[in-house]
Image (cartoon, rainbow, N blue to C red; front, side, top):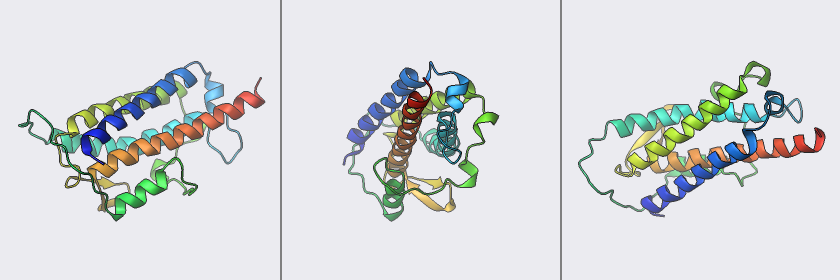
Length: 191
């Protein structure tokens, strides 16, 4: 896959996520956003807070790379994207289609829904997705195979920039699907 086509695809997918949040979650009450289908499952607001915690870390690392870039090019250079073993593993684990379910690391595990302010969580989510979109636009000037960002597992495990962008969007889609399942279940129980 090529960098510029991938960037365009990721932008479209991010816009779809923002559209879903606006269309599906904006009209829900705080009680609905906090509703859990079962004690061991997350609510919509917990799904979004998990994404906020995870993505804030990665987006700020990406922002650091982009901010360090001195824009001397006027056109981004396309390139063939190559994933390494770490990138392939991370992409597999967060892919919305995979059946693998790993527990969220403690640092990105959301607080209980009752302790969250749903309006703030949703606003932060939209702000972070918008920032990710901005960083994606700027990062097309970087080499997505050579530049790396630190992972949540520490500086010893880094992701290629292309893998990081793809992982973030896939991770978002995975938990948006989860939040939509919660909403669907809520609609069948709360009528």
